[in-house]
Length: 326
Image (cartoon, rainbow, N blue to C red; front, top):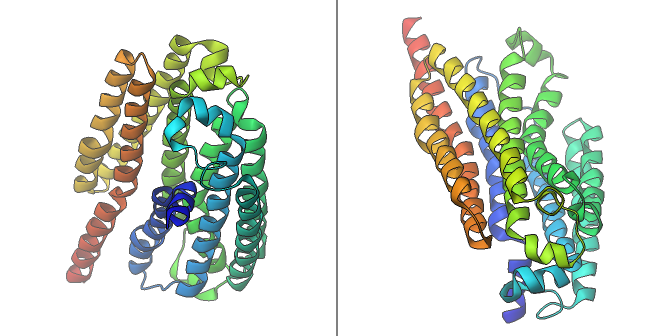
């Protein structure tokens, strides 16, 4: 039982749940409400999409394992109570688990992509597996590269969830008949992906500030070590400003389109928490402070994706009004 719980901690179940949650939110609370306006149904089956999601989870779980495999010495300094590899789980089992989960994830990903009629998307899982290994082995300890690759991978999650359906749709004559433009698909998808990318990048940089002590001893060249905490704070402020500006633009569009509830939701549950993060960042001086900010950012990522619940609700109301008028 102890080994099972340790292994469960190793694969970060909460993070895996969030990946699956994000993909389902994109499919059922973004794409589906748009489809309803034209009485159009999904081309990609539920089972195929479920396997596509599973492949992401398997490769991501493998990535968390290999990350802990290479981070043992650093984690002994930064998180001594949370070291699993080498204590409860042997390094050999961790390494074998990485390869097994990665291979199974890639195979399932290729099968699901091919079954959806978009086999090229299967290569994404090879890119993920290799990228996560490269991140853990080398890129994590380099200036900004590690932060960017993790943010990119998390940004690709909603993008992939949308594009497997969109690319399959484009091969369907019915889709062309129903839609004169795919702009709502693409614009919304990139907005969601952009939010995931930026919020993840901010959090990754904050986590580097949290882990500075252990990273220094390990000889890492992360942003806080190279530039210093003060300069990295300025960089994070700039990212937060960009995020708030983009959210403001999104709210303007939402208000014009009469998605007023979504506008208020974003203000209360996303923008205000981001402003609190700005305030907390200004006062932060030590590892505990940065860990607290990292937790806030994780919560914001959850509340941000949950905005799609409100979007779907308002879309359904708009659809009912249209049908009533006709």
